[in-house]
Length: 304
Image 1: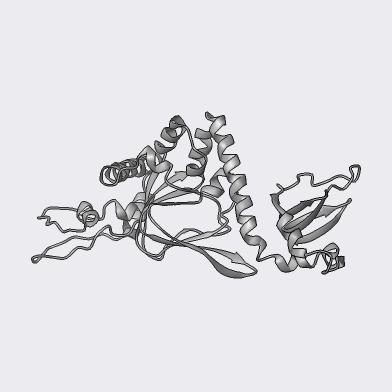
Image 2: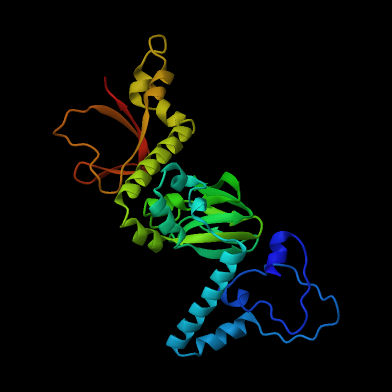
C-alpha cells in the first residue's frame, strides 16, 4: 500500500493483513488512504494503548522492541524511497561546499527516515537542534521571527534541505521554523551523527566552514537594505555634506561580518582601523558596559 501511495495508484489487500503497526510506534501519519472494498471485520488497538503496553515492558525489552521496529521502518523506507549519496549534495551548504565522495558516503549511511503529516512542525525556532533534514517529497514553509513577528523566508518543495546551517555551525537552537504544508517524506541526519562523521574529514569540515561563512555574508548583504535606516543614523554619515559625498557610497563599502560569543572585536591598544555598525547582538564595551542592539552581527567599513 505504501508503494501504491508513492506511485499514485491503488492496490488491493486481502485478509489477513495488518496496517499501521509501524506508524503508531514511530509517530507517523498514515502513508495512504484505505477504503473498504468489501465488508471488512477488523480488530484495532489505539496508539495510546500500544505506548502503554510498551512502557510496562522491562527497559531492555522495550529498547530492543523499539530498535527492531525502527529497523523495519528504515528498511521499508530505504526500499521504497532509497536515499543515495548524490542526495547529500542536492542543496544547501552540503552542495555549495563540494564534499569529497568519502564524506558524502559516510553522511548518507547515517541518515534516518522521517515522515511528517501536513501541518506538523519539522523544526521550531529556538528549539534544540535535532539534525538537518533532506525533504524528499512534499512542500514546506520556512519562517523566522523578526522584531517579534513571524516573517516568511521561503517556500520549499522536495527535494530540498533544511537545518544545514544549524548543524554545520553547531548551533544549540534552530534559527528558523519549518512547517509541513503537505505530508512530507524526509530523511534526517542527526546532529550527533554529523559530528561523529565530521571528526574523520577535517578537510571537508573546513570547506563547510567556508561555505557557511559565505552564506552568512550573503544573508547579511541581502539584509543591508532592511537596515539602511540604521546605517543612515551613523553620526559620521550625518555629518557628511550631501553635496560633497553620497552616503549611499558608504553603504556599498560596508562588509558583513559575524563575531562568535566572547570573541575579541577590537582592543584599545590598537589604532581604530574600521567603522562598525552592529545590527544584532550585544557588545561588551570596556569593563562592563554593553552596546546594543542584541548579538554581534553587522558590517564593518575599513578606513582607507
